[in-house]
Image (cartoon, rainbow, N blue to C red; front, side, top):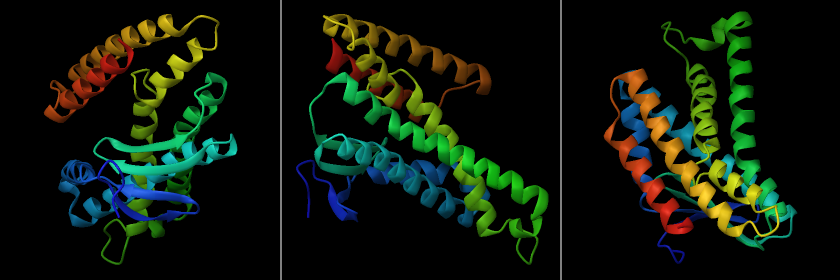
Length: 229
């Protein structure tokens, strides 16, 4: 079964339908290529952790939206991660907790995964290796849980529209009377400055910026301009 965006129905997460858009294959390829140096087990573990983490992130949005009266909540996996849609009003006082809930899940997974990794590394090191002395599947899953969710948490917190951080900024400004136009202008300007700043930081750290990163930044800024100008 396909939804209106051409995404394939996978299953229900409780009462929330989960879909996968064909573009989600790009996400799988990008994650796999990023961890290919660690071997096939690392690649598979990274893909599993990434997909599960994105689903949990979007569930944070969806369950909070349902608790605040939203209906027809759906989650769709796609190239940039995931998107949670629902029928609800757009009052900023209700939008803010919905938007914050997703990154909050990612931060919790980051912190929990890091604590578990630290605890296992100091008191149960045997859990982290197999009989051959290589990293165990458990070690890979725990390590990647905090590592990948660190990236997801920080990335989604950036005030670049339409990332969660950008939408939080937009709706926070909208809390004030007659702030619709200023909210759009301020959020658009901040999105451009933060995106450029993030690219400069990555360049200074790595000496280069990958093609995918440039394409993603351009795609985000294009959508910010289209939605806010």
